[in-house]
Image (cartoon, rainbow over all chains, first blue to last red):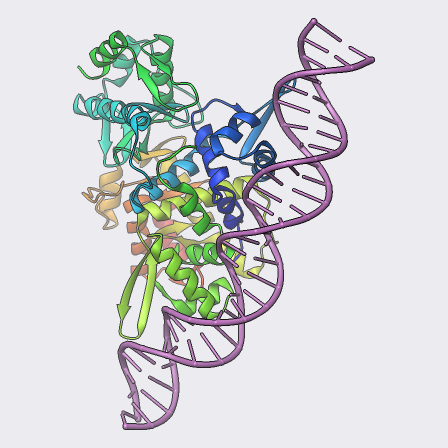
Length: 224
Length: 224
DNA sequence: AGAATGCTTCGATGACGGACGAACTATGCG
DNA sequence: CGCATAGTTCGTCCGTCATCGAAGCATTCT
């Protein structure tokens, strides 16, 4: 018998389908209400509420009360990283349960992964940035290249972040099975994309839909 | 209802205490037999066998048959990374279940984490290497410093690894709650420590026990 | 061949936990 | 103040899964 951190407790919290769906939904980065999460998970409101209190007790969620609305969100990047890691294993290990439908097609192209961009667009972007040596990658490790500061400054992003999170991190993309860019830099780029209105978030989904002109702008800046 | 990788399936595999104990035991890096794992998990042999076949079916384990012995091991670094991530959250989120006993004291000092060294010794080593700028750390990202190649070459470690895993990675230490060194470099250092007989693996445990002279050698090389 | 060891499968038992409807609490609105 | 909306708590039902003993296979040793 071993001791230490109670890993089974945490894993079993994620191990229920309803709760896993809720956590996956919250990977979109925005906090959601109990009703929205009930819908996402496909369970009744009481059931969802029970799951949410368990997740809260387990420390995986934070709660922000605003009037009669109660917004649940992921407790932090560490929790998001854990979900990512589990998702990566699940994608690598098991065949998909269902054939991706039309809505999933949009998800494959571009979607939000906690606070940064994921999907084919994101993978292509990272590949191009590495090819241009703006970023350097030894396998799964990513770091800034010599020209990174000036390159990102030109598009209004400051890479000299003193934040506690890493500036760039690799995050395994479950649809493409290759890495895309996470970390504060990944988050800043997504902010930029949304701020410039190159793309908008699909309602009730993690999908990110580019407008025709937005897509051109994105390609000009990141894929040129 | 969302689709995609079946994260609940994977998480629920880890979510059973017996299976979690087995996986934690296998983080030691060496493959173990069903009987050993039953002992680790504190369950009967039939129960352990049932759990093991579930873990196999879930793709989390590999099996190597040698005569009448069947050795179970973690399926790969990605699975190990997932366990680490869950352990990190569990350590950050929940208080320890039990007070650490004398055996756990040895574990806190130095232990094996999949294929590299963890514990106070490992954390001190990383701190010192960063202070000497052999390695560079921006928060949780670790990379080689300019003097890294010559420094490690002097102790017989080649950092120019072309392996598919990252050379250095940060791995959150659940006992110290700070990072230690993982990746191929971390693995090479542990190999060195064991090859030089500075320390030996404790039987039936992840603990690594340094001999008095071994400890001096370790401190001379890594903590000077 | 026969015995011993290592492990898996079978079958029965029992308990934990997820599900929902109904009732209850809280906030906001007219 | 009464009604509507958002959410939690309670009670109960039911399915799933962990558990173990006993029996069945497989491999090695003598």
